[in-house]
Amino acid sequence: MKNDPLAVREWSKEEVARRWFRLFPGVRDEKGQPVSADRIVVRRFLDDEERVEVCRKRLGNLSWYMRCLNSDRNEAFRGAELCPVSSASALNTK
Image (cartoon, rainbow, N blue to C red; front, side):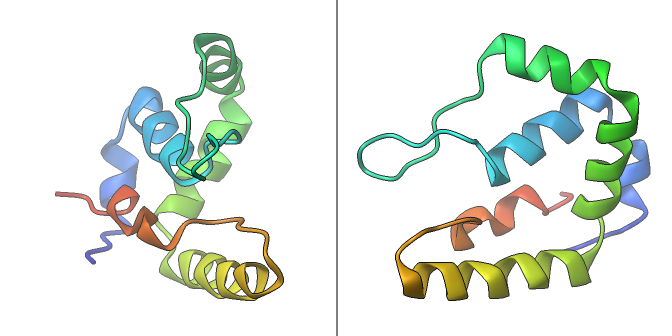
């Protein structure tokens, strides 16, 4: 996994949304796989400048991501998945 906290500054709002919804799709199918966010949800996300910037900072913050993974392990142990471990690709900047 690579993390470049400065690279997130160069991402468009759409790129932030794409990576955020890859990590947190909100909806999963019957197999537990993420379902793409619909256009209305993405549009609302993009229209909220403050939320986009918060998510941008979180995506560039390795400590935040590690907390997410740790939370994932704890939740998975209890049977509820919050943050997919396979989501490391959402943070890759290259």
